[in-house]
Image (cartoon, rainbow, N blue to C red; front, side, top):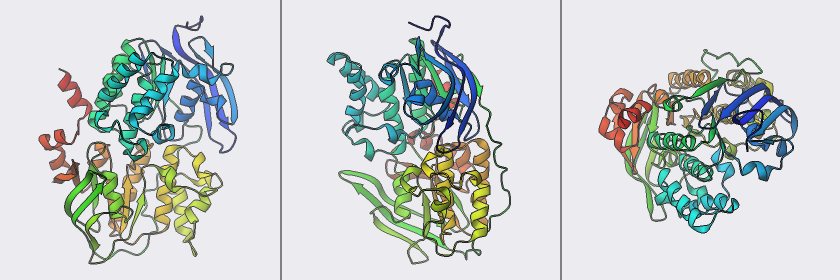
Amino acid sequence: MRNANSAAILRAEAVAYRYADNGHTLSPVSLEAEAGGCLAVTGVSGCGKSTLARCLTGLIPHLYRGEMAGSVWIENLHTTTTSLWELSERAGMVFQNPAAQMLATTVENEIIFGLENLGLPRPEIAARLEQALTQFGLIALRGRDPRSLSGGEQQRLALASIMSRRPAALVLDEPFSMLDGDGAADLVAALAELTAQGAASVACEHRLEWLETLPGLRTLHLAAPHPPAEIAHVIPPLARKRMPFMLDVRGLSVQRGVHEVLHNLEFHALGGEVIAIVGRNGAGKTTLLRALAGLQRAEGVITVDGGSPNLGMVFQNPDVQLFNASVREEILYRIAAPDRELYAWLLKALGLERYEATPPLLLSEGEKKRLALATVLMRQPRDGILLDEPALGQDDGHKTQLLHLTRALAHAGQLVILTTHDLALAAQADRLLLLAEGHIIAEGTPAAVLGDTEACRRAGMRTPERRAEGAR
């Protein structure tokens, strides 16, 4: 039964929120999500999209400390006065960081867990499980531990787990952020199917190009409670210019159990280059960066001018490298004589000035990514930096800022290697490496690699336009 005063399945009236611990706020928002409709919520990083998603599903006020104003209804249930377990039967949420909602020890059991909580009969659970595994490309991964999956594979699993429950209201927080082209197309198809069945969906997202293919999409822009930091265009006060060097990779292979993630990779990179690595979820992009950083056991040779490379790495999931009590302590951790000029520049350039005393894990996902970048740059690695999905949680302004920063590092003679599913960002690199099935299947300028139709098809590099053309 829906709210008697509205045809909407999901309704918010002047909902606002202020966290008790970090000063983040959500300015008053009103919205309605109707049966069979999809609402896209967008806005700059830190404007409150994730907070709104938590309010819409009842996680706020039940699980977070702070001050909430306004009202939210899911069907006829007021979220403040209804228990969270009752709300969860009607509304499902896919988190921005999918690792945070993994509970089971296998992919299969992760999906089954939610279905069992609905009290469905065994035959129905079995049917929905197989459909979800097939729909999100997880058949081959069904016995894997979710913690062993790539970020994109974890995102597919989170989507499969929640959407298999067929909730009346579905809230997605940056659902396309880690997905390759095939995964994004699968999600659009699943959303179209779910809304056709009468569900209401809300997607908080920076990348709207995929959602725009959904019929009847409405868009809501959130205003930032604080003006975004002005992008710093000046070259940062980095260490002295790096002398020319070459990173040489020969015979690089990584084995995990019976699965060979990378097979006999050979390539080189010069100081002053910006290189993007692209490929489908699970292709080995993160594994390659970890091997280059010395964090992954591997066979083969990785050298810089005959010695070991010194490269700083910003992880895909910033939670695993942030552990101090404040932003200030995180950036300056164990640096005996910090460069105060560089520290002040990083705070300003990365929009972290007002969070110096804030615990890092209370920041938004985009802010945590920028903090992790600041911690690496503060240590001034000799040869350059490795960025694993740096566009996650970042609006267009912060992506532009990231490009300025990578170009400044390259201008100083350092090497920048990044992985991304954002092809617009990848196109700004000097060179592209296309990974598929543990091999580099194409290498060259972005225009040449992205123009190789067969290689892109093999690597799952579909775009919204290609998906739409394929549907015709």
